[in-house]
Amino acid sequence: MLTRTQADALPASQTLPADDLGTKTNDSILIVAFHFPPIATSSGMQRALKVVRYLREDGWRPAVLTVDPRAYAKSHSGQLAEIPADVPVHRAFGLDATRHFAIKGRYPGCLAWPDPWASWWPAAVLAGIRLIRRYRPKIIWSTFPITTANLVALALARWSGLPWVADLRDPITLDGYPADPMRFRWARWVERKTVAAARTVVFTSEYTRRDYEERYPGLAGRTELIPNGYDEANFPETSGAAGAGGGPRLTLVHSGALQRQGRNPGAFFEALKALKASGKADASTLRVVLRASGFEREYRELAERHGVADLVELGGYLPYEQALREMVEADGLLLFQGTAYNHAVPAKIYEYLFARRPVFALVDERGETQRVLTEIGIGSTARIDDAADIAARLERFLRDVRSGEYRLPDTAVLEQYSRRRQTLRLSALLRRIVAEEARRPA
Image (cartoon, rainbow, N blue to C red; front, side, top):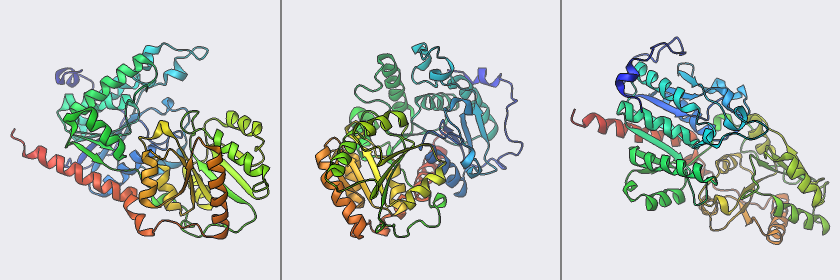
């Protein structure tokens, strides 16, 4: 770790916006977020972006530390305009070991400890020190899931003595994850250091919060639950209108990444095959769109093997607001969240909620997603690995959508999951910590 003397010897020059944050108030805050516009490969970017926007509206003066866009596999400029014009954003140098250091797909494993973006750490820490010296924040907020972001925030909190709120959202480690033993040891070390050093650790699911409090007894009393949500400002004006429902061909949409384990559509394709064989679904009555799954070729071949390629469309990436429009215009929305993800609740649930469309969820009934679906009254569910169960429940779901009998959650449920409201909760937490810090003896 750098000492304050070493850091003070660094050049003060830095690529920063010409305009300052104005007066240095007690409400200044340093945001450390790897996922930030223009990244186009992670919905997690929305959480950091909305926190910046709505903290700014609530009187905070954020300065953002993120990574150079070259570290992102895909970029899109669509949401850059949402960053408030007076918020400085510094993009520190960093590379992706899996792309920039690989030769014929192979790269030294040490370059990906604790994750493939470890090269971001040195430049990010130096840039963070300069940001702290310039803007004098009163608190640091960092957001996972890139483990290196925790390392950056840890170093800056230690150097500056500032209180640190670590927005973990989901677990850094699980039993057997990361699969690489050395990466697991590094990640578990970062996890321990984060839990020990952070003033407060924030989670998006009660399941994960309980797990961490059991794993680290000293964490009790230092956790907060702030779920993901939706931002109504990004939705098209047609949001909330009644779905097509009665048309001859229903369209079901899944928006976002799928995985080989935990979010695999294999059993769902088997169910479609069964419905097609029984004459209860065909290309004239059903269209399934899997948008930006990340495995387009693989799942297209899988659909062909099951004989349902005429029902399934493997669509590529869409800019965020176009993806939201596709959700709103669909007849129904799909969710895949199996056992491997029992600890987490996908952010898209809340966007589905605001889109006001029927939801068919393939889940593990023991998982946190099932609990949240039940709690907020959204979705018809089926066991993700049971093709027969999926077929029976999907048939009923399609019938209810077509007839208009599917019941949507009460609109009163919507407001509590607004990104603005969630950020106001975070703002209250941050202000409380800053006030406590101010009362500490010098």
